Image 1 (cartoon, each protein chain N blue to C red):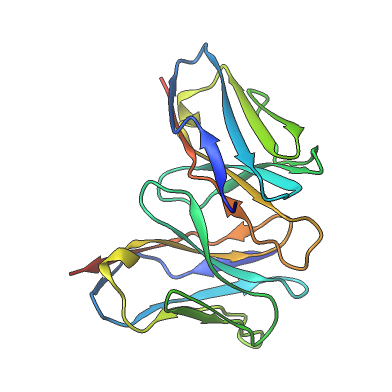
Image 2 (tube, chains in turn brown, purple):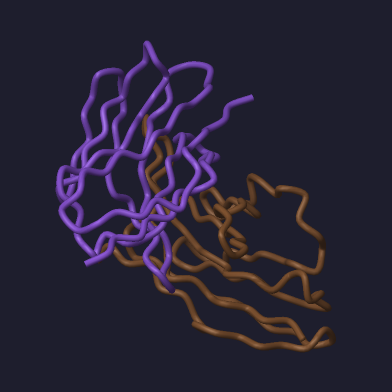
Length: 114
Length: 109
């Protein structure tokens, strides 16, 4: 299984809502990533988990809260978002400790904040 | 710091034309290099990779050679198809992958 799955595919939320994005992989990868991608731009790294521990937080606002409950799952909890947070949110996974770092991406969750 | 520079798009070609998308990088050490492709409405997929100097990555008719002397990793395909229309990202590997800005390719029938 070389697939990263993400749910939901689309999400519309108001600025006062709380929602969560989910990501799952069964490739035995021990690094998992959240990216934010705006239209016509490359992905921007938000968070990296390595062995279920947060290893990189790219100064992301606290209204985004990541969670890695086990080696296969990655969540992104959303609260009090702003309209400018509307974007495609991509999850990825990779092996740790190899000389290269090929990442496997999910299809993304398209988030609209009203 | 490390960086990746890609040619700006969009690139518009007719079917069966030759494709080149230029990519140059700045990095310390000897990073791995990647090309990712993003089809409309989808996430990124790895297209090809090269892990050391003079390596040639290839997949689906696309090729790129890791040129350390010119710090380049240009993407080429001899004959593009309409189905190749997508955004192509050159990337520098590592724990924090560094992506180029992306080049949008349109292929006309």
